[in-house]
Amino acid sequence: MHWTVAAPFINKPNLINEPWLTRNVPGDRHQFHIVPRPKPLENWHNQKSSVTGFKDWLIYQQHGMEAIKASEGGVITVFPQLPAVIGMQQRLTRKRIPVVAWLFNVGTCSSGIRQAIAQFSLKDIDRFVVHTRREVDIYHQWLGISKERFEFVPFHQSEIPVTYEENTTDPFITALGSAHRDFPTFFQAVEKLNLPTVVASSEHALEGLTVPPNVKTPFGIGRADCLRLAQEARISIVPLLPKPHVTAAGQITIVEAMLMGRAIIATRCHGAEDYIQHGETGLLVEPQSVEDLVQAIEMLWNNSALRNRLGQTAKRYAKEHFSCDAAGAALGRILDKVADTAGMY
Image 1 (tube, rainbow, N blue to C red):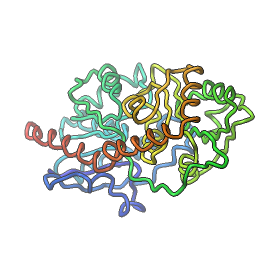
Image 2 (image 1 turned 180 degrees about the vertical axis):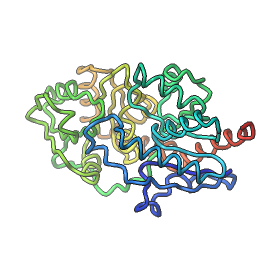
Image 3 (image 1 turned 120 degrees about the horizontal axis):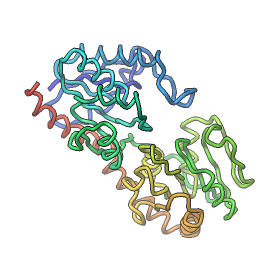
Image 4 (image 1 turned 120 degrees about the vertical axis):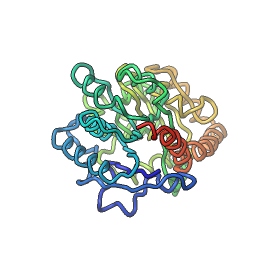
């Protein structure tokens, strides 16, 4: 079956070097054509608002229409805005084509008019691919769509070269990322332990917090510097703040740490338990528990054999479950299901 792929991070300048998962789908049943975004997507770190603005919606609308026009079968979208505009167009014109919405993560589920619009525009989307199991229940209730149309597939990441070793001369802990991070609990734990710590996050995420003297907070560093911190740190920590309306958080940081074979601690919320098997590929701690986090850090900080075992097991697990090949195989299975019912349109 022929599919057009519309992903906001693929534009004309990077089209040749960004195949997404099209090369990782096994077999030859499906053919793919990537439709580039008309205008490059703004780096989310530079966005002033987490809400999609009117001008951006116009670009999503144009991108979605170009994907429909180019398709001889169905459309695969990435991010939630594109299935919304494509679904709205189909509801208004009463014309259906198969649509698979990959990486359907809306961040927070709004109520009122926004919820009503989402329910209307997304009603006929064939499959939603989410990256935590809890999202299946959340979106099922929010959109009023049957659970059978949601598929959990772990977040994927291409292989990350490990070019730095753990810094054994000046060991430190690191925490990377900004979204829904529980830095108040994290700071209390590392201050109590008085261990050298580096936090690579945004100024907004740390706004109003008192940073302990043993914590460094380099702002504005790039991806390469973040990967170096993750590889050189003795422990990587993803402290998450539980919020009822948040759908998922922390998966990218967790997956990258595991792929690099790092010993990792994460808060047991927002789907972290879908990625980390406690005591096997990392450690999970209870939300907002300083005591739990302190115990986990002490356990790993003082036990190099445990750190190595968890890190190496995490790396093997990540390569098997979070690789592009694993995601491509999952995508292929989903496309097979949708293609088998496409004749009903």
